[in-house]
Length: 123
Length: 111
Image (cartoon, rainbow over the protein chains, first blue to last red):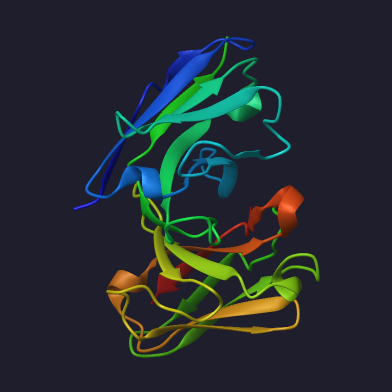
């Protein structure tokens, strides 16, 4: 059974940093691209960042480029999101999501999602 | 403002059909056959219902179907059931710079 378990969310002041983790199990982690998708309170979904199965390719939404860094440790089956220079508009539930297809073919469909971790940026 | 436009709400009675639209541009919905639909119940994670415009993942009832015409994609839910009441989001590939964009979501109410 595929499981994704996020952690690391919390309250942080504007300008601060936070590191999210997503522990994966139930599938061959290194074979799948992974993404972070966020949802502000009462709002819609916004794709944030993605990383290829090997970790060699990374992708970012313009809204977080230069501030967030995605990475993965395939030996630990864990996905990370390092968030720096946080802003109030980064407040959201952050989901990690597994790509539907393995390999490099179209990583932008997400068939499994974690339960999410809430990040609140406020003074 | 979301990149893809969805109606805020839709509704139907049990057993009826309802269609939710998702309008983009030729740079996303109209340019690629990579439109997906997600269902999200309150407090839960999204669930993939449709991918590549009209394909259903294993386990998704065939009451859910997808289509696309030009820059507008549609999700049709036939034979509405109470458990279909949820928020529905469309997404589309948007090229190698933007990658993927979502719609603002549609709240489906089963009357």
